[in-house]
Length: 192
Image (tube, rainbow, N blue to C red; front, top):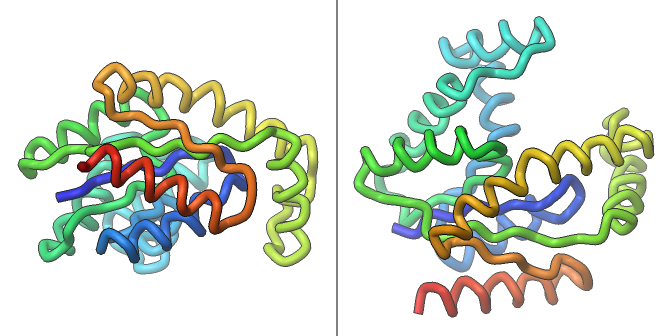
């Protein structure tokens, strides 16, 4: 089973690249943002619990997020593997994910991190704001804050998997095709 974490700051192209990776390697793409929205919209027990924290402006506890991920993974017993997009964001979450996958007799094979220049991210997100309708995409200060939060929280996760020789930084600049080919090459080399 091939399980990947796709990392990158907001606007780095994770969603786009996850689609290509899922297609090529026959993986199930799990975006935690989409997962939260689906559970909340479906008014599931986990969705209702998550919403209760979000409505108070609090972070959803890791155990709730892990329970959602477990439910999603278990709903795809035929899967060749999974791409985790947007999770884990902290070392504690990475450890919890590793524990969950270990209980399922599998593990994270590789963390692929898209490296994109901060100024390019700002410009990409401002351009995305023209069609996304998201207020947080249209404010440069908010975008820069999101980049800073990403860097502070996720760098330790990259290092956590790097210590296990399971992290790879991929140049996320250039055309979509260029980035896709770099991701494929890194993954193919790791799995060879």
